[in-house]
Length: 226
Image (tube, rainbow, N blue to C red; front, side, top):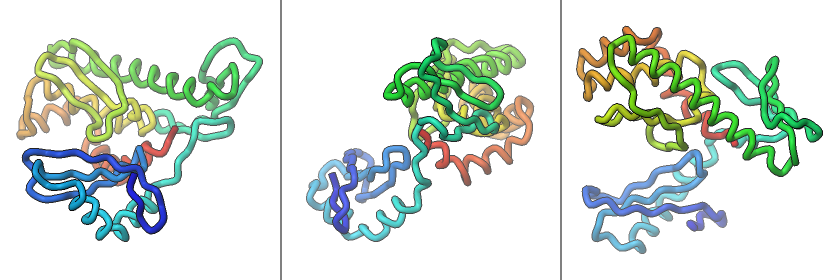
């Protein structure tokens, strides 16, 4: 834990052999500070550096969008369409979606986890369907599609044809999710970011440049949910 101006801030410390200088990052999803240290730098020196940068760190943390917990009445976007969460304690259907509402049955204390599990399942289905469809168009095979809570990448493509995506893509506009899928499918042909890679990505999705711009400008928004 890092104490700045009387506030307790979660602190994550990592040592990187390649790091030449102490660096600080704000983890928007965890509302935490990441302190990166060169291999031989003392932790004390890193903490002093963080304290020296306290004003900047607090400004960055305060600028993060307010959290939106998964609870009754919360509004959550699914592929660009807002849905309101409603708790149905007498229901027996688990979690389901209908006419702009995400219904959740069962005990209220389980509602946040059930909503998160539902959204992850929706992401897995949507991403998997689109990935396999796009791979078929370029005569490639997707070995596996995984969704998880990733903090540094929206998606990744392994050399064995395995794809990993951030489940929070289900909270972005449809064209943004589609672009990220196209980006990773294009890597099945080109494991680089050369001209041919970008040409293929553009063939697999529409408005790639607009989607990239949305992620740069608004990507942090989806970290506030849950």
